[in-house]
Image (cartoon, rainbow, N blue to C red; front, side, top):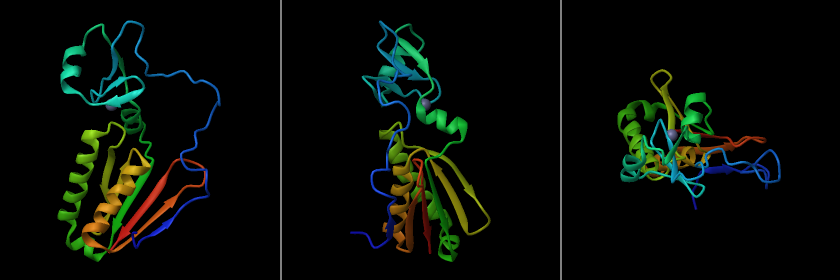
Length: 174
Ligand SMILES: [Zn+2]
């Protein structure tokens, strides 16, 4: 489909969870009698093992006994500076079109993040004139942002997954 290089790591390793095979205590589960848990930082809600945004429900539950206050996994990754994806953009073309490429990245990230609590940009840092490093909370978001830039501007895109952890490096250059 795409014309970029996609170097997948060895099969079966992707998405593998470490730790016990048995039942794991859910650290975000609301207490007995509570309707949901809420992230004190981004106001994401957690019900039935699922994270989502719902402003109305957050406004109704926020600050009441019916909700448990937690820090969601995404805000925790941001707080700890623990990305699962790093997208690097570089090249002369990037330098020339930097503002519009950065806008494209931000728009795409906003679109995804408004729907999904788990996908968020942790940090965007410019390294000199022709390089930008974007850290994301999930592998998926780094890939998605890289593909969006590739779709709009072509260039060269590649993905490199870490052998042991959930982590991907996405490089785009033109
Ligand atoms: Zn949060």
